[in-house]
Length: 190
Length: 141
Picture 1 (cartoon, each protein chain N blue to C red):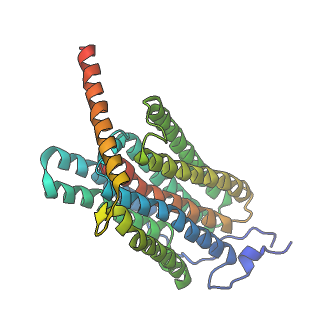
Picture 2: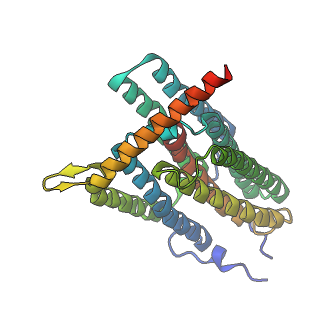
Picture 3: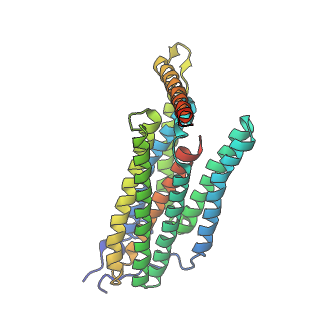
């Protein structure tokens, strides 16, 4: 069987597969960057947003930050194991990362339920529109990352396509980076 | 070889990832505690500056640590940083182009009446919400 093109072709000093992941991240920078920049502009101009952001749960946000940082640790440990040729260990770390993503989404779902029950919906004001859009879009990215990780882990457990472990990890770290900025914006600056 | 390829050894020497995670957790605690301490003990510009530094300054440090140590951007070819920098430049362009209209509500020969009304409406709704909360607390007692 031939090696995949994503691993053998090298057009920019790095394998095409990894270059593809970086292009994906570049497009995500524009998506999340646009949201964050817009949020900052409106936050500066609308003092009433401080009152509205006072309703977000700082402890839930902090806990979720800890969960994502820990899942990033396991993703990078999976990369280290894959580079050492230990596919089974890499798969275990990747599945732990997926577990972290699941915990993150459960906490987020509880938060949303509490807020919606309190009457704070996506149409309650511009702050809440930003809040639900940004956290919802981020949550979808977490979900997508979890699905990718499960496929990569299934291969890695058989010592196949180990180069994909790093590619999936780079994406996951980016999702973590986005949350690192959303956390102070939505939960701390009150 | 049938597709069982370990990643090429671009990151031959891995740092101590657990130690870096520990530093990130300490920074997380500082970013939560800092604004709380500021709210309880400070006021005015000093409070604002302290909150900005502890919340957003620490977020920048955390992002740097993740990018450098977990994403290994330092050992990636320069084209990676170039691609990401161009996209971040687009964000600066977005801000520079739109901020004058969004961040200000009046200027020479223009007045953003709807934004001012929205602020007034939201502030009074917030005050009413707070009043209702106090009334509920009073009824509970």
